[in-house]
Length: 393
Image (cartoon, rainbow, N blue to C red; front, side, top):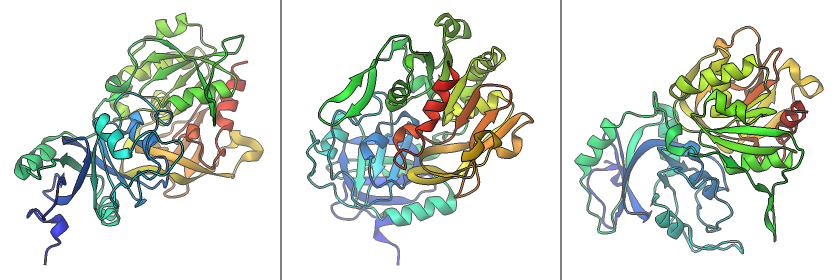
């Protein structure tokens, strides 16, 4: 007998649906914004930080399945937003979002989702959906919410099937800043909020925004830098005119090979000038491409706040072989077998052995696949910001 939750026959009370490109229809209860959105379905294993996840630009064009069943319990607030540009288009959760219980909450999670145009779907067997993604890969899909329960399922299936998917897609122009920004924020503290950045004689970092999380810039400030953020397609000449002591390459969504069409030549020119470089996530992949490596689409990707990564590179000295608990969000990876001579693999995933870090010999240039600014561990990875800032002196 067919599972009614994945039948095209709509159950009573269903106000939301997830339609996969293979024709699978998964019914649930909609919340947040109404309407429909197309994207790639992925899963995130973190127990906390759902608001940060939903506002991370790296999740652009993605529908996030949360494996932790209770999402929304601490509500939403204005301080935990990673970016005000496009993030995840929607999310899938197990339990109905209940009233929040947290002293920092300013509104219910469902209300926040609605205000920000993000569609939610609850009442889903997220374990089964996660197993499906692990076995078959991340599918293209449409998520839809209609309070009256009326859906044109064949049209939703067709839309999911016609969507091109993330491979070959350059999404950085959709999520980048459009003007230079002199970054003014510092670390957050309970009771006082975010500090102001000091613009004194600190080393100057120019950060290229491919879809950056704001907390990256706060951590650069915490480590002792002053930061100017520039758009993804900023020219080499414009970057050099800002007189950087170092250049940071941010995270972001989409296929790194597509973004690399315009990003890689700039990064290669910066490497030729021996300007210190530090890349995170997509920025790490851009650095690898600039050095001559290749990137590949992963079967299911890595997303969560509990990913163990081992330091393996000789350049890490006495800290080699230490394991960090990291936060990750990526569906593409650097192909370790493609790393050319002179590019050292410095970190690997202990889940699947995939590349999680590189350093370029003879250059002050390194990158990591994971997100040290997300405070995993909770402070296992802050040393990376300090390492970069020390290079600038």
